[in-house]
Length: 329
Length: 226
Image 1 (cartoon, each protein chain N blue to C red):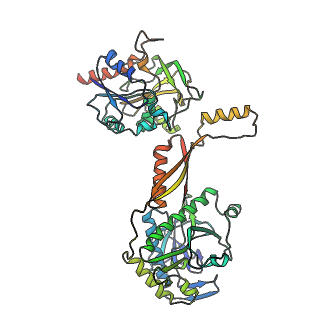
Image 2: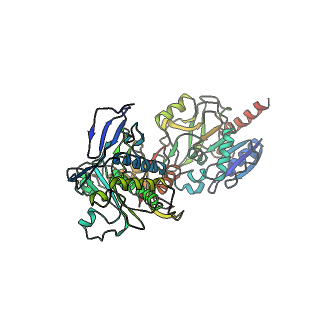
Image 3: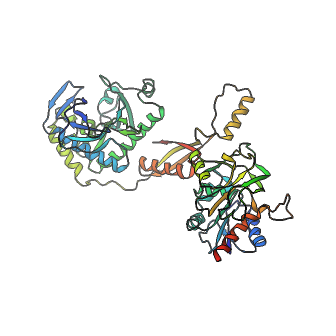
């Protein structure tokens, strides 16, 4: 097998080529390391392969946990991964558990301070990646609806829980990381991009040793050596087992309403009387039921699974009703 | 023949069903409590009308999760005859033993009336004593009898002759005026009208048109003995 020569796109650290199937794409990780928006640059032999390996390991971890992602399989080269082809959303989604990096320049946080709850921040992928508010994301039509934005946030927090446990069990503090999302051909929201230490801040819990691209940014240590150590620690068995079965309580709202094309006699009657009362401007009205649910689960992913099952088997009748789930992290 | 009438909290037509078995058919009867999965070796199961679990959530939903319903499903899967009347039909639909769903009547009213029905087929276990095309009159008493299913499901029901009873006139907004259906095999029947309320001469508006539903089961049993 040979790597296709046609290049679809080339970025600072990756090259995209057409895959064997139209729905697939080949991603090759380069040896280049960049920082400060490209102002600092170096070729680091072996980096591409290490990033491909670490990304594979973390994508597989997420797949096992039930997170939908672009990752399909390894390619024919050690630096190559095969992805599902996505239409990417031009947003960088940053999840922060501890204060490092840009946030301590923007706000007065002490470096390394743990946040009370994980923070999700959005940055617009343009020349200098400015931070962007949720209103602006919708205004610029970067995502189609508010619901998609909420879904992205939920997925980011679900992924964070998986990472906190995985890195935590290996004695590594997962301080922050960056994700990107996209839609597949069926319009399904999936995790895209890469999961390499270029996009994470990882610190040894005991020594504080830097295990991510900060070693390059700040000239702390050899990058390839650091990534190699990290990969070995991620592949090794658990060294710092966490307490099991830590159930957490999550709050959720499940809103059940009749499906769009189905006439709900109750809603119709209410709307008619509303018009009789003189509220002529009320155009549409759909009565539904809202359930406030408290659920115990080990993770957000597990909580969502239980709630969807509840909604689909008990709270709604799929023949005539749809439901919307709002899970509060 | 031994009949079982399932009793859920909130059932209120189980006595009428029992009379249909014991006084009309003169057969054996056992009440089956919703909490007990034991079917007591019955030959036929009847799900009566009423307001199981106060119709909370949706009519028939909570009853569907009763321990006995797993046994009823297994019984039906083996070809055992199961009839659901009114709330019993709603339970069968919620349990996915019959397709579709029963929505609020378009009138938004609880409708108590005598309605004319067309018997569409006599191949189901509970319609074999009628003639196809026969017009019968049965009482109805429901607030949620507005039968709905997706067009492809309705088409399949019609093509397979699974519509057993049809209202002569629109009563509650049901698609194709469907009043009762059966599964593909014909051993599970759900209907909104109450055949057990039109058996006795002493009843108001008596015509005896409900007898056919119960006669059908015996007719079938006798045929099997032959």
